[in-house]
Length: 152
Image (cartoon, rainbow, N blue to C red):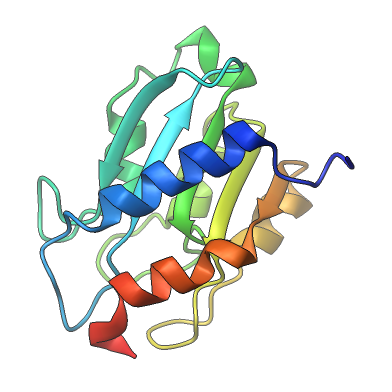
C-alpha cells in the first residue's frame, strides 16, 4: 500500500462522514457535507455536517469548532470530509481549506472533488501545496453525489 492509499480505517471514517451528510437540511445553494476528525488510532474526536448549527455552516468548520485549537491530538489527526474542502466561499470569509491549514492536522481524506457548481474549488491543491497529505477516495463519490442529487 502506498502512502496515498486509503486504509480500512480511512474508508470506515469517510463512510461515517457520508452518513453525517445525510442529516444536512437540504439547500438549493449548498452541498450537503459531513466531516469527521479522528486521532491517529481512528478514534473520533469531533464531527459535523453542513448547516448543523447555522444555515451558513460548512461541515469541516463545525467539526473543527468541536475541538480546542491547541488540542495536541490534532498534530496526528485526520480530517475526513465527504466533499473536497472548499477553497473559496461566498457565505464567510474563510474557506474550509484555510481553516484546516490554521490547524496542525496533517492529513485530509475526502470522497468527491467539489464540482464547479458554485465556485471553482482548489481545496485539495491548496492543502497539498501547504504540505498536508491529501487522499481522495473516488469510489465513494457516488454516495456523496446521491446525497447531493438535489443540486445535480
